[in-house]
Length: 124
Image (cartoon, rainbow, N blue to C red; front, side, top):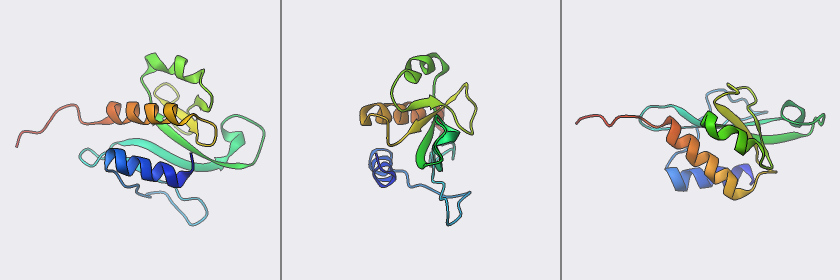
């Protein structure tokens, strides 16, 4: 999936626009957060591929998502899913956007969204 398609999918499915707290003009870093609690459920980065899985310095888009540790082992067997880059490796995964199946990508984004949402509704 291309980064533009990822933005569109998350906006349509979850009603969330990316924000850019760490960005510069060379490497934008879109962060996708819940509107209510501001917790991240996905962080996209443009990094050399060697940071994730190979010796290649080719720049690629990756997406870090939160994951239930009980599902992590099974998900790591899927194409395009790796141990987290730049996040806690017990609770996060890295998705290589140009390798992962779209169905798997949508599943892990949904899982991350659910794991990071507010646990309790506010009374109001």
